[in-house]
Image 1 (spheres, rainbow, N blue to C red):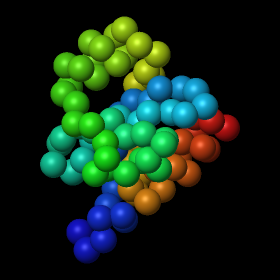
Image 2 (tube, rainbow, N blue to C red; image 1 turned 30 degrees about the horizontal axis):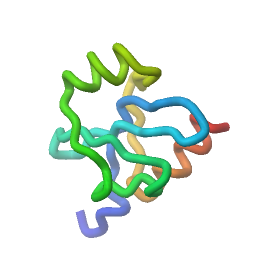
Image 3 (cartoon, helix red, strand yellow; image 1 turned 60 degrees about the vertical axis):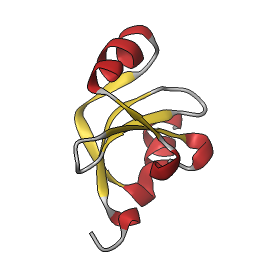
Image 4 (cartoon, rainbow, N blue to C red; image 1 turned 45 degrees about the vertical axis):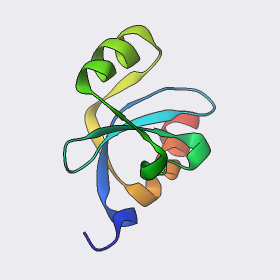
Length: 87
């Protein structure tokens, strides 16, 4: 893990729309909500729990689970969102 920007994360869920939120799983297993407005900067993301992802984000809001999770380099999260969600 020489360069954190090239470290891969797993995209577990997203909120479709013009400014998608991505919920990613770090190699440590930690889940983090990352935001379009911050270019998916992990440091500016919000740590979330598995229960929140399942019950709140996917269960009550418009988040869509990604099955199987997409493995994406951190530096490419913006490209992933534009390609897979925004179109």
